[in-house]
Image (cartoon, rainbow, N blue to C red; front, side):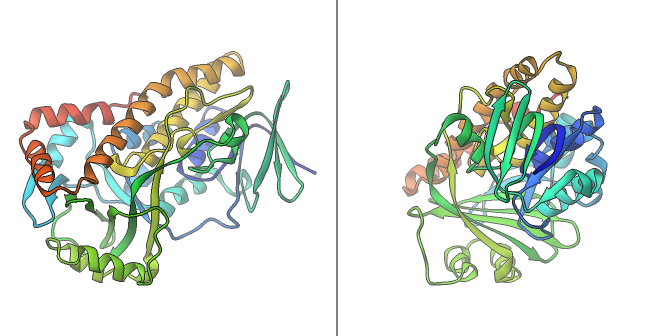
Length: 381
C-alpha cells in the first residue's frame, strides 16, 4: 500500500524534520513527515535556542510564534559549584552583537508551533521506517505496517540512532562521552533570568529560566556507560548536587520525579558525506554531538533551512544535495568537535586541573569571549 507520493519524504518529526517541512512548504515544495511515535507528545524536557536558531526560524516565519511562548534570557553566566562567578555576558551585549540573547522552552512547545503550521495532513504518526530504496525516480520508504511512501528526495531526520544513516553508510560506532546527564523541568520562579552553567570536578549543572514560572535544568556527571542505580532519578540528582550553590537544591526539590529524564551522552566522529542518491540526513542523524554547546536542536534547524533552500534553487537533486553538504559539513563538524572538547574538559576530576581550567575561563577578556561566541551564533540565512 502506498501512502502518498510527495516531493520530499521526511523520516522523523523532531525540530529539524518539522522545520524542514515548514521551510519546504514556504518554497512551494510538497513534503510528508513520518514519525514512529504514535502521537505528538505534550511532554519532554527543555532545550535552548540560541540566536542562530532563532534567525533560522525567522526565515521560515516561525520565530515570532516561538518567542511568544518563551522569555528571552537576561544573558548567560558561568559559576563554580560553590557559587563563585567565572563570567557573565549581559543580555544587551548579546542582543547588540547577535540580535538575540537566546531562550529556553519545552521541546514539545517548539514542535507544537511547527505542527500547527503544517497541519495534521502533513505529518503521519505511528510509522516506523524499516527500509529505504534509492532508485532513478527518487526514493521509497518502507514501513513496519507494510505501507510505503515515495518521494523525489528522502531525508533521514531520525536522530542519534538513525536507521536511515545505517541504510546509507552501514552501522557506525557511537562514542560514549564518559558522562551521563539528567534533564528536568522545575515549577518555580527564578530571581534572575540569566541562563547559567556551573562547573564542578567531573560534573556540571545548568539552569535556564522558562516562561510561566518554570526552569529547564540539566545535571551531568562522570559515570560508567549504562550504569544502573537503585535510587530514583530525583534522589540521585539530590545526592550528587544538593550541596551546590543556590538555587540548585531548590530547583531539584521543585521538580517532579516524572519530569526528570536520564541519558548517557554519545556522539560520533563526523561523516564525510550525508547523502547517497536521493537520500540525505539532517540533524543528529547526520552529526550527533554532545550537548555541551546547547546546539543540538539549533544545528538541526539550520540544516533544515539550508536544505530547503538548496532544493528550491537547484536544477536537479544531486546538485541540491551537494550544495547542502557543501554549506553544512564544515560548520557542523566544527560544532561537534568543539562540543566534544568542552565536554571532555567537564569530565576532569583533578582539583588542581579543574582550578586551572576555571581560572583560564575567568580571565578571558570580554571582547574575546564575544568573538568566541560569534562563530557559533553567526548563521546567515
